[in-house]
Figure 1: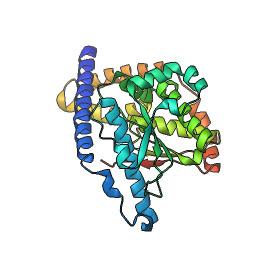
Figure 2 (figure 1 turned 120 degrees about the vertical axis):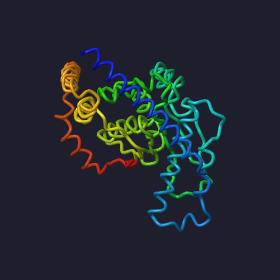
Figure 3 (figure 1 turned 135 degrees about the vertical axis):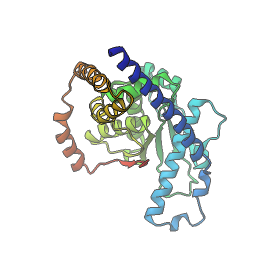
Figure 4 (figure 1 turned 60 degrees about the horizontal axis):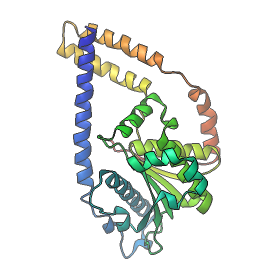
Length: 292
């Protein structure tokens, strides 16, 4: 019975992952049909605040697409050029000490191309665009490092990953050199989770960086278990009317063991004081969530 539950659970995971890959590919292809150059108009300076914010969001989204394409090795569309930005190498924004100290993390970033650093061109017509943008891509389904980072989100251990380390070093270096108010951080999905974590961490230290994040995940192991419990039980009862409840109970016992195996942290006890600090600093991220 236990093996049947594991087999069924594995099948559900594989099906969900396959559906995610297909849907993600479709959405990316559909979104990239829009030419980012069309957001710039002759009367850009006459736009109201709402329109300027929408244009800024489109600019940031284009930079995220640029990072995606860098990893996939596609022909250089150079989305950043279309929205009047230059792409810089990390060697150009980090100090010699940082390059030596974080050599391992930099090697990992070079292999997986987690992020891109972009500098706004002087001729950019958009008044809302930030001088500096750090953009982080989301999960590439065929990239093992991204899948490991996704698992780290669920297990609440993303803060210890190379992606977070090098992202914080880059953002902190840009802020120290050019002012934190001139730096924006943006990302999608996994990249949104990483950017949100780093911006929040910096804000708690008094370094306020504006963050714009697309569809950030809010899934931990505990919340995932509670969310899926009723749906899985309902599905099992429909597929196996006689033994469905037994399968469910076996899976629940296994899930309880896994949950208890994850070391508890004092994150929740720190949450309220940290939120108070963020409120006093008047820092909050911009979150763009697709309702579908």
